[in-house]
Length: 309
Image 1: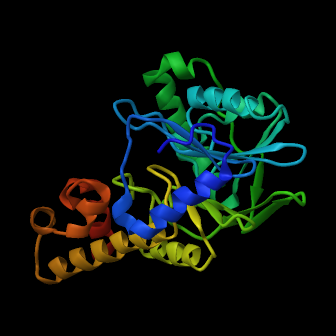
Image 2: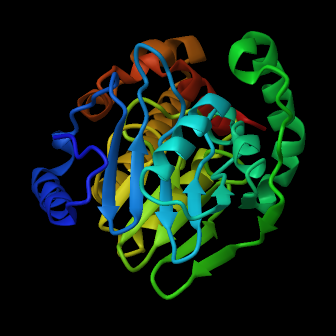
Image 3: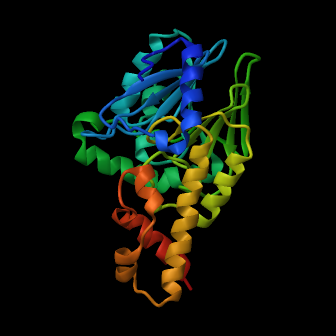
């Protein structure tokens, strides 16, 4: 079901009620499709295409009385597309773009927003990442994607917050929350308590999208537990399809069981290569659509975490 630029919130509610009844087995991925859904009045979610061309992260935007908040800037080209999409719904100025973390598919498009007057916002724990790995990644993309990046300048956030930043004008309320080191050191999420909607960035994804290279899977589990404590109705993940609160549990289950299974094999004296061959998490293929063994980077990272001295 595609609710393209939908304004029929009743339909959206019914849609998620059906999904909730089906549990996590409902996930039917449409990797070749970009889809926009209005989750609540003035609250939009854009699910990004991932195949055959990866177009970056999922995004969102919230229309307040006098301005717009964008959730995740994406790549520069995608940012331009999203700005045009927002203009189909409102002419209010885009005041803020919130980067859930520093990765290029979430933040490299900041300059498309700042040049029209917006302020890029992120957790202060992400500041060092933006100023080091973020800029290096951007410069690398300028070389590999000259048609999209060209001579663009990298735009770091102009506003950092400690643990919480609230935007509330009486009609919309968005709480930007830093919960700890998960997918990156500076991960933050956008929580809309009036609607029960949680934009998670890559702290929670729906499918085989987890990258752990900047992560800490032990504290990542704790972050997901904190999210579960919120009265969440709709989860808007960093990648993959929309879901309900059960997705948080599924994402957490992956890290809990991955750490547990690798830990047991380490205790048995298995080498990393042997672990890659023997590891088996049947539920993961049902959820993500691929065998857990294919997530080599995740296996190597968790093994390193568990065997570090």
